Length: 512
Image 1 (cartoon, rainbow, N blue to C red):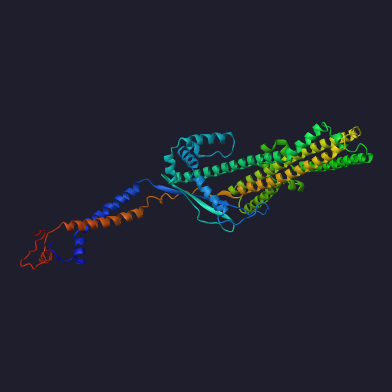
Image 2 (tube, rainbow, N blue to C red):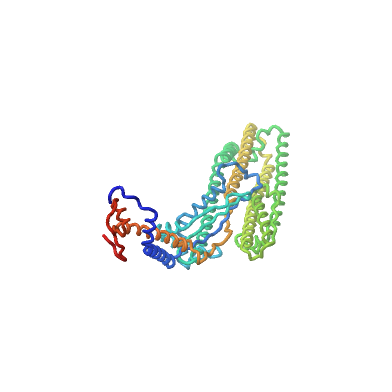
């Protein structure tokens, strides 16, 4: 084309489009129709959602003190829950249960049947390849739209996309939520077991470093210098003093009176604890109790037990909160409501935990009474043999008193540190169990006419726009290869010079 040829006008461009409008419409229609057909007959992908709630109750106890932090404990907890949900363990078990209808339903009660089912699920999950788990992971999304509010709670949603039917997506979301809650309970149990083992090791180390040393020195003194006769030791340094001898006897008798008073006090406490423990616990055993056995039973814990065992105090507060929730729910729902049944189970388990702690305290009281009675018997024997030990060397009595004070101090220190350690561990366990995860809503059933992919109207609209652009491009490409001249104006525009010829109009033909 000669230089200086003028550019095409808007009229020329419109002429090109109108000249090829049929091709443009055909291309647009073909692409849109093909996309519509592909979306209509392709496999649909549906999304089901499960709503979960993580709640952190406020504690009124003195052990749990809130400290300012830049990261909320609940926020850290939710991040950990996300890691659990996306873990291979949870995803593979979900895929295994989703693929096998025999494993889809979880047994309602724990026991041999549940353990057998769990072993089958785990065996099937071990055979799931990582690629399949990764593919399932791409269809899972965890969102936290809420944020912490004044109730210190967070609602988060687990969304699962699955090809096939809406029911399959609903089942996949439900199974994933079940496996997540199961894994969370297992992880919490593992943490508590590790904490218990650590506590036992720390207590053993504490006893070895403090109490055992004092007891060993005291026992060596009794064995080597007093030859194991504690009654003789009581007379050391008083062989020439009848007054001092009588004073020692009086001290022994006072100790016996104190022991009698202490034994009576512990026996009264023992009887009180036995009265408060329901009779069905002694008849059936704590592990064989059922929910109905404790229905309507109010366990009253003596004040002395509260002081001895801070865990019971925490459990009673938890029980009170559960009963308040139960009363609130009973005003709105019947007894078959799911949350009411879950609440009843929590109340039963809390009562069992309280009874377990009380039975433990009862055993400790029994052992303490036996110890006190043994000490009382020992003192009685010392009183009887006191006269035979008045001629022992009095200088050893000072060392004996020193060792006794050292032993008492070591025992006091051990008990104090043991109490502090138990309080610290109780605080840790309470912090671990503070945030409660519950399922607010079951998995939703997607609408069969509204899959998440493909979106029929959107894909068809995009295809139509793309077809229109492609048809327009086709029209201009075809026109760029068309060098035919149909009029004098086109000839002058093409050559850039005046044309002194005539171009006849030929219907359906061109002049070249």
